[in-house]
Length: 162
Image 1 (tube, rainbow, N blue to C red):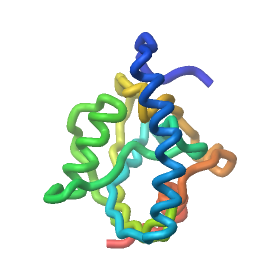
Image 2: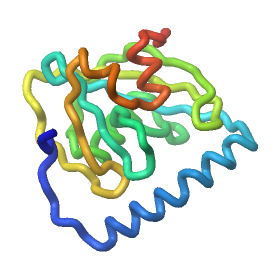
Image 3: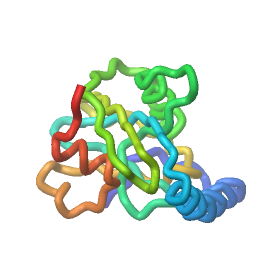
Image 4: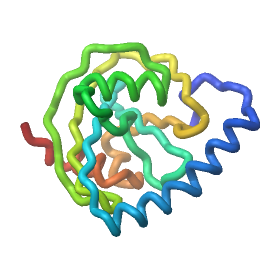
């Protein structure tokens, strides 16, 4: 599969961050399974033509959409815009809210707000090379064969509600 992102020379600090994230994520999941915290996040389904842009984090086996946690005092859309900039280097784009889904994912009681962005051409991606290490365009017919996070699976099933 061809690379979609602009290549950046690997740096030692990036490898250290990836190792730290890979070590911390299972510990965080174990803690979440014990505590069952509430969590709120935002994800962006980016369509390039008919294909969906998926990203791979350094600490998960599944593919995801760009996005992450909503900070205190931050709106879901502001969080989605911030995460797109941090993870894949996209400037602000007009996003369309398509609802939210709830689930018990990774041990947390999660509410994820979904946004869509539709583009005619592939944007210039700049992955952070720490948390996000790969990007992939997936045609709709290929989505069934790709391991995705539970939140992305909820979006693909149409479980988003306003």
